[in-house]
Image (cartoon, rainbow, N blue to C red; front, side, top):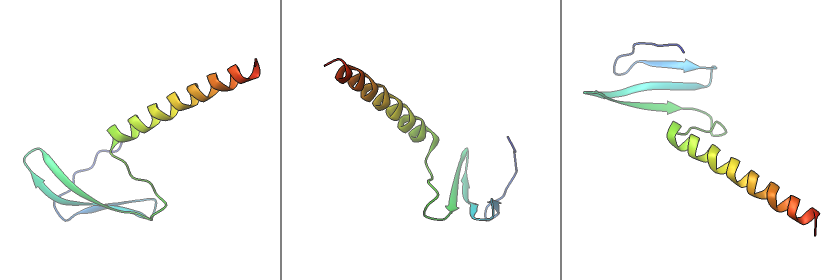
Amino acid sequence: MLALSRKKGEALVINNNVEITILEVKGEQVKIGISAPKEVPIYRKELYVQIQESNKEAMNEDAIEGIKNLFK
């Protein structure tokens, strides 16, 4: 992991097409802005983890149904 210090108004660039800017700092909260192409998905990590778990569950359910259909 790369750890950087940034101040309000400062930014960093990832892969030439994603820019993350520090918009505001209040106590322990930091507000960031992200500029990226529309085709680059951006998720909060907790939502990303939920999506991945839901996808795994759906795949498992589909696989079970597929196996059941094989024996019908």
